[in-house]
Image 1: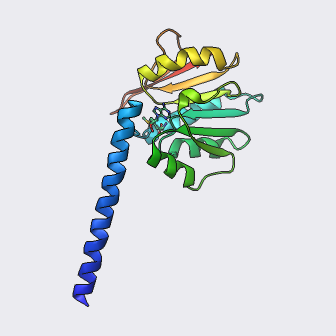
Image 2 (image 1 turned 90 degrees about the vertical axis):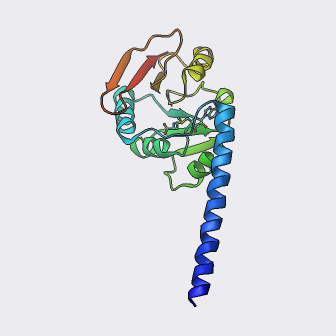
Image 3 (image 1 turned 180 degrees about the vertical axis):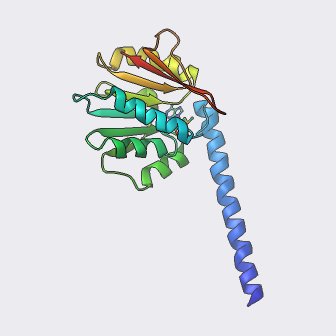
Length: 184
Ligand SMILES: C[S@@+](CC[C@H](N)C(=O)[O-])C[C@H]1O[C@@H](n2cnc3c(N)ncnc32)[C@H](O)[C@@H]1O
């Protein structure tokens, strides 16, 4: 009996190790491809991002998009906090996408397996992202062309190369994060 239990735990341990290795290898591959890790926003910053969304939201807004939604934590909170709006999370890294796609989430949340540069922003009223300065430089031109006048972009940590923010929220603490708000 003891030996059967031991075999079971060894097999379980080996299976979990192999699974973790596969996830780690895929994440490394996608990090290399997208040039950004799938690290989620820390809870304090997430809370502030939600507060900023509610501050800038107006009655005409219908759609929020999170570009690079990672494991889906922020996208789920956005959808729960804004039940009347459609929230779309876009993600290219396969395991974060699968977790976001299949985690328990409200009906107003849709997760797409897509490159953010191919996602059409013309119906998006509020964009949220936590990417990199390189991503922001590439997105600036796309956003200038696609976003409606009056759309809001909220970027954690990273800035556009030309456009100036209308507000910067600074969070002090171990992470010392700045959140940039842009009006298009
Ligand atoms: C730092 S994580 C942020 C995750 C989430 N937004 C959050 O704040 O918790 C950035 C995510 O963007 C995704 N990403 C980067 N470039 C992308 C691209 N071109 N298309 C789709 N997703 C991309 C990465 O795979 C990663 O999961």
